[in-house]
Image (cartoon, rainbow, N blue to C red):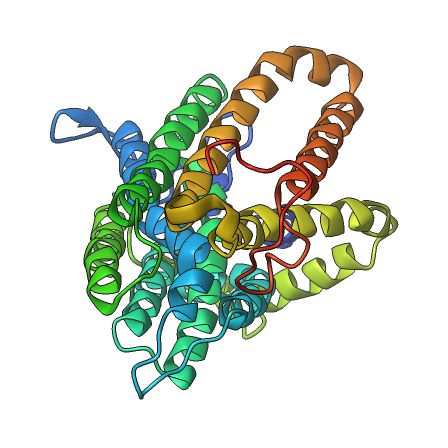
Length: 392
């Protein structure tokens, strides 16, 4: 995207236009952030940029707290449903997860072009609205609505995360980018922690998720998701804006080939495809595949296996939520460790950070292998694990 924006600036500069006419071309900061949306001054008692960082954090807390909690528990929740309209299976949650990531992958590919066409704020709010709509499918589950909801869930997540970087950099400077990232991450991760704790206490001592329990769970998840949608709508940023101030450019300098949103969107897709086929991306592909496997295991498979393991007794359902809590806490700790290692990694390269993460991942995989029964990820099992719980 940055390469495409640079090419755009070069094209306009070749027409010998005033430097002021370039203010709206790039929405990404260089040494100092560009503020095309007018992100200056104060709103209420806050600086507008800091207010946007807080809104972004709380919006993601509500929206993705609901998203992560849903993905953690969807397999065990769907497996418990048998009401004449929908008969759940032990692997239905995995199908929804796969469809969610199909939607997310497609969204990541198209999001830069969509953002250029419709604006960053509209993409962000639209993505959060998709996530809210997806949660509704669990109130009255039907196979078709669950699958559509999963696709919407992935699409919305991809839109939000793609545009997230734009808002973070637009509302930060070189001096505040680290602080703002930390504030956002701390607020954001509290969402999954709170909702998964709610699920833990809701299902503690329960061996089967009834319809009433499912209603009680999504009576909190759905409002949280809607609240995230409403919170992100408060971002101090135009819903859509032009890529540059056309009124600052003399009318006789505009031609049919002038830069348009459509052209920017096409260039974004072209640059994305070009980068995908580059040598660096092929070298990074094994790492990306490993990250995908790791994410799938700890966002869904591991928690589901805990819920299907009868050796944990009446705590097995509650452990699904507790797993979500520790996953979120672990992500926070990982961010803290990376922050402390930041100066060293900046000086000596990031190889050590990647190797450390891989070793921690492998250790986690091995522990999961020891504490879970062999077939626990596929359905209810009473088989023992290599290391069983002492309280059973």
